Each structure stands twice: as C-alpha cells, then as structure tokens.
Length: 592
Image (tube, rainbow, N blue to C red; front, side):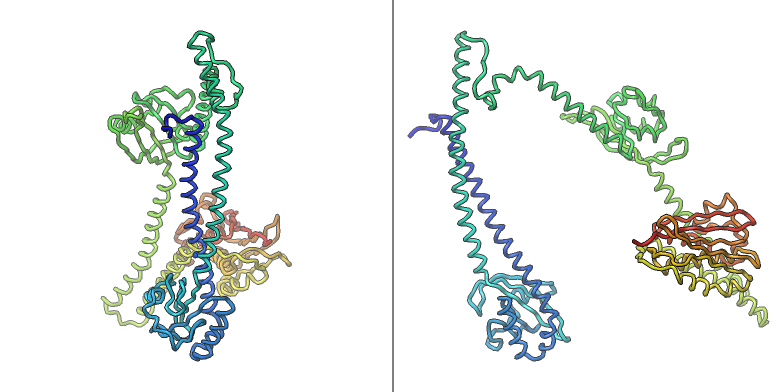
C-alpha cells in the first residue's frame, strides 16, 4: 500500500475532496434532519394552538360545560373531525371529556407537565411523552380558559408517529441524493483534475528546460484559462494589477469623501503635528471657515480656538477619548458637542486624531423653551394663587363680618379660581394634544359651527357681535378629527369675541381650493401688531397682558390651535392690522 506522499496529486485531490464532501454532507444531513423535526413540531404546535383558541370560543362547548355527558360526546365528534385528541380537564385535575377515552376511567391529570405549566400561569403548557392512556408517543399542548365562570384546561394532543415516519422517509431520500451527488461530483473532479495535471506537467517540463538553458521564459500553455495556466504570465500583469489597486483606492477615497460630505456632523482629521489631513464641508460651515486648500494647514491657524487645540494636545499625548461642549460664533451663537479621538496604526502608535462636531443648538433651544415654559407656568399659577390667598387671609385675619365686603372678596376669589381652573384645563388639553395621535376620518363640515356658536352665544350677545356664516354649500368630505376642529374653532371664535369691538362683526368662511378646504375666521377687532404676529402661537404669549387678563385669557388658546392644525397635517396663517381686525386661515385635506 502506497504512502500518502507517494500518491499522485490527482489521487490526493480526489481523496481530500471526497473526505471533505463526506464530512460536509454529514453535517448538512444532521442539521437538516434536526431542523426538519423542529419545523414539523413547530407547525404541529401552531395548529394545536389555533384549534385550542377555536375551542375556547365554541358556543356548544360553552353551553355543555356543566353537562359532562353531552360535552364528552361533542368532544369525541370534534376529535374525529380534526383527527386530534381533545381533553377537557377541571382545574383540580379531573377529566370531564376526552375524544379518545372514557373520562371516568382516566387518572387525575394534575401532575401532567403540560397541565402543571398551565396552572402555574403560563399561556400554554407543552410536553412530548408516552401517553399512559393510549400508549403512544404524543405531543401535548394545554391552555386554561374561563367558561361560564368555570376554570377549565383544554388540552390537545397528536401522535408523533406520523412526524417520525415522514422524517425517516425524508432522511432516506436525502441520503440517496447525497450519495448520488458525491459520486457525480467526484467523477467531475477526476476528469477536471486531468486538465490541471497536464498543465502542471507542461510547466514542470518547461521549468526543467529553463534550468538547462534551453529557454529563458515559461511560454504559453494550452490550458490558459486556468489559474495554473495563468501563473506563468502573472509577472506581465503586475503593472496592470497595481493600476487596478490604485483605481480601487481612489474609488474608496471618493466613497469616503461622499459619505463625509453628506454627514450632518462635522469631521476633522489631523496628524500628530496637528496638520489638517481632512475636513468635511459641514465642519467648515459650523466653524465658519474656508475649506479651499485647507488640507496640510496648521489646525490652530485655521480653527483659531485655543479650547480645541488644548483638547487636541491631550488626545495626541494620551490615547484617550474626550467629549466636551463649546460655544462658537458663526456669526450667530451655536453650541457644538466636540468629540476628540486618537487615530492609531497597527502597532497602537498614535498617528493622528479625529474630531467630530455635533450641532446641539436645537437641543439647547428646547431646554431654554422648557425653562421658559416652567417659569411661565409658575408665574401664571402664582398670580391667581397669590390673589386668592391674599383675600382669604384678609377675611380670616381681620375678622370681617360685613356681608357685602365678604361677598365682594369671595367673588374675587371665585373669579381667580375660575381663571386658575381655565389655565389648568388648557394646560391639560395642550399636553394631551402634544402626545395624542389624531385619528383623522372623512367627515362633512355641514354642522361644524353648531357647537362653537352655541357655546359662545352668551358672549356674542354681551358685546352685540354679529356673526356672518359664509361656508360654501356642498363642501367635500375632509380628513379631520371633528371634536378637535370644533375645539379649534371655539378658541378662534372666542378670541375674535374677546378682542373685538362692541357691535363688531365676525366672518366665518369655508371654501374648496386645490384639493383642500380652507377655513377662515375673521374679526373687526383691535388687530395684532406686526412685531407680535410671529409669537402669538407661543405658550403664554400675550400681545397686551393687561387686556388679556381683563378678558380672561390664559395665553394658551392659540398654542392649542397650532397643535390641532399640526395634527391635521395643515398650516395656519394670520393676517392682521392694528385697528382693522385679524384673519386666521387654515386648511383641511380632502378625503380621497
């Protein structure tokens, strides 16, 4: 018997290939078989769970639950129909119905694994075992159910013999297929290796001729498309390959440049001497510097910020990560989160640093808005509370007995309490609007003004304000949340009343235009100064604070309007002139 190193390359190739295939096919065969079994059992469990859910809602089972004989017969009929064993068990473990066996002859099932798991609070109890009743390997799934105030366990089971039989049949088929595939592939490799060996022999012979001085290079071989055939020509292609590598590097550089240019964060890379290697346009924009011919320039000469250089020195001296927040003039004030990280080579030597700049100005702005909101809320709550406490203390500490004085003070306390209650309700409404998803439905605008005008009827009569309804007829369906749009119109019409003149007018319009329905609320009141029009939708912003308090405004109504409009994927516009009146206009999208 020949030793391994005495065998030909062709024989070694066939043996190694056959061994690899046998090992690979064996592993594939094992995992496929295992996964097939798991797949069949998973499908079986899904089927059994679905049947359990159907049985839970079966009207006849519900009606028969207190009649064991009828329930047992019905369960047997169902079991035959779906070819599944069905067992109904009381929570104490007694079987009251079974599709394959007589319940009175069956043991208490409280100790069955699937029943025990269900009673412990699991959604389903699952087990596979030999059935003591049927003497078959079965797969069980059980679930508890409350039927007519009776807690029962519905258990379904199927024999695993069918699955095992199907798996064994599949195993034989796959085994036959793998054996045929192994034979076919080895035959192909045997024939294919013949061409490889022929090329190797030619290369060996020509190499021998070179050593004898009979030729100065290895010539072409007939099997020129094979790696072995092209081996002798590789030195002619070294230059070509080098060009290709350079092209690939340039392509990768262009990709990196495209990624950096599209980033919303600023990125700066420097070497150990703090020379700029790369900077993306966003960093130039953030720092307000010119990016042209900046590579190779000194970091300090271009950035001109001692804080950045200080952190850059720390990073280049220590392989550490630093993150800090800095303010820059650009020319407006911006806040940047600056992250400094070293760049190292394969030997962990520091060769440079990278700086990532993140604009957090918006976050700072939101924090300021939050602080302002808290301050405004505190102020708005404090004012009526101070008034309430002052008048209450006056009554109690001075022992006032005059009914008219007490009535006057209590009236003021009541007014301030009402104001406080309105403010809190508006805050709650605003908070709800900011967190709520608007369920928009196709609705008609025919009766949309009924509720707002009814609620505000007394206010209109007090100031003798006339309302003109110019809603077009036969307006199309629009996508809206009707209650929220009514709330929006209440706020706008209420403002049109509060800030209107006596005997003033309010015009309500609705018309279709460009697949939208526009709604306008216009008054002939005091108007809004131009400088205040951009801020009227802010929380607690008042054009005339003294007048707002006189008319009972909370400063939140228009903020609520803005959020309702935003929730309807719309925009609101305001046009106003002092002394002439104000016009609010928004739109609703047509329903398709």
